[in-house]
Length: 432
Ligand code: ACO
Image 1 (cartoon, helix red, strand yellow):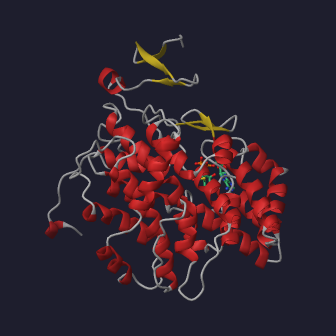
Image 2: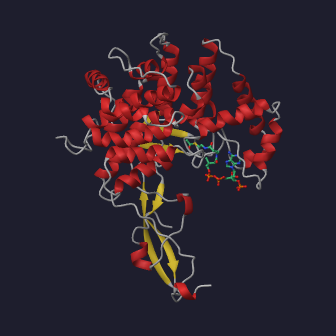
Image 3: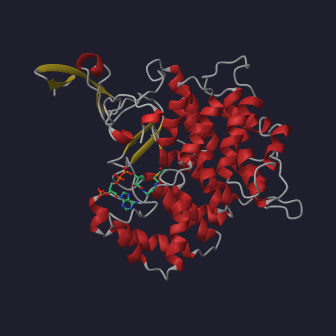
């Protein structure tokens, strides 16, 4: 392989495939002309090794455990920023100045209500409807209540009325989905509260029992949302891009992303972790039983919260979340047996050859649920929390995809057909 081309030898012909180098030195073999030149496609189930686009939003190095949004290290952002500052960064490419941040805060308040007609929808979901299905449905429906195409603005212009509405209203819808699930009256947003404080207020305030907003919980939530805000071409973000590439507008594209996130192998893992830890607890803390089950290739069982497609070392988000988890429980004087179980499980796994050989470390979902529990957020809301955090990333990718001619081509993978090649038609009367 030369510096600029990879050489492919196929059927006695040598093909030069250009090498594309990213700004941090990662290299990709450009196969876009392969089908035209050779008649061959590439096969890469699960897109293990396929770059679907070039992107300027998030950089991650799975070997070194690096995660950066727009060039800024995730630890610096989580330590020093508000979630909406990070949302601004992801959407525009730059951190906001003070006046820009003030304007953005104002927008978050201005657009925080949802249309009263949408409120009726909440009444017609079954009593125990999943908050994720409510979220996905309602976000898709925003398209009809707030027509995106009618606005006299650049739809891909970073912060727009459309994006600000989506960021603010999704938070309201998320809290309303919880209230609906509880059968409680809806609590409306307040103009004097920050993005995260307002969310906790809408979740936990009650007409007969006012909720006291705790700055420790606000700060922990802020951190969690920042840590989830983007993660380049993961399953849900790729879904948003793929759906958007067919020309679908922002709100329904995001609704599709929410559905993709729901899966237990993706954002649904945070809820599955809690169930796993609870099962271990109920089972007399028989850790080895669960570890052995996960190692048995025939069991189909996995230790949820471990492993990642890209990270082959400790997930940098998990490092920060683990520390935040300790801090929150300590300052709130909460003792949660699930934290002890999680810590012990991690310790056992870290010395087990099976997990060492496969580079299986805790991921972003392993400790986050314990913090949400401390906040009073129930397990069935955990993936909604993830969606709230991931929202700015999804929007930024949808906009970037639409602006880039190459990656805005309709997404359409190929296949290798392995079915029956050809056979004569048999009329219904002759089939036996
Ligand atoms: N427990 C036990 N074994 C595991 C686990 C796990 N959590 N994760 C992977 N493995 C094993 C696999 O069985 C496989 O073993 P083998 O080589 O002997 O067949 C090997 O490690 C590689 O696993 P793959 O499934 O090929 O890895 P992939 O990159 O496709 O999957 C995934 C990544 C889905 C995250 C996987 O590690 C997993 O299922 N983890 C548990 C679910 C989870 O925590 N998901 C959240 C991920 S973070 C996020 O999406 C926000």
